[in-house]
Amino acid sequence: GAVVSQHPSWVICKSGTSVKIECRSLDFQATTMFWYRQFPKQSLMLMATSNEGSKATYEQGVEKDKFLINHASLTLSTLTVTSAHPEDSSFYICSATPLGVGLGDTQYFGPGTRLTVL
Amino acid sequence: GEDVEQSLFLSVREGDSSVINCTYTDSSSTYLYWYKQEPGAGLQLLTYIFSNMDMKQDQRLTVLLNKKDKHLSLRIADTQTGDSAIYFCAESEGGYNKLIFGAGTRLAVHP
Image (tube, rainbow over all chains, first blue to last red):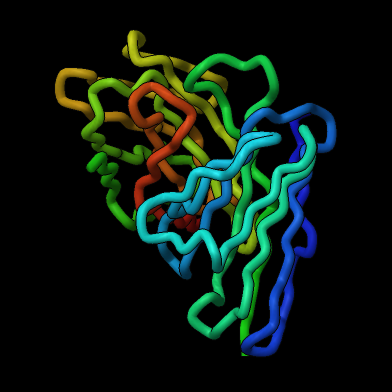
């Protein structure tokens, strides 16, 4: 149980285009989904926290107009990288916390999406 | 802000025990976690410990927590080649769901 999927698993795009990444909780409903970014050989950096039906909360230094997050249902959150540039190339990972779970409880992670911007 | 620190690399022989260490700063963390990441993949939750515990054992994994020193360790008994991966320590910031990750410890298991 508690499987999180991401689509696509990898994407290559041209500079200036927008890319949408989907994060789905397959066998549970998620009140909260998180989006992380991971640079090579580095840790995960939280970009934003997304709650179903409300606006995402972005971490300091993350441009909300560049990284658009939509959490329209309890099983789906999307991250759109708008006008992507080579410096946006990274590994993007989402996670989800099951509905009804208490504070501080487990996040289940997706397999990640590798974005390469040419 | 909150910070989590780990050593970056550990090399062990197959069959030996591995001990990965972590220090954290947020004394209000409710849970502390260990995640495993294999190349090109997402994170897999290995185990977690509630902040009022000092030890948790789960098969080959033993987690020790020294809350006074804000030190967490993960011991893997009888380490196998399949254990080669990056191991991340994480604390829950302020007791909430927001996780702060360490830089990860790369575990290399050799014959």
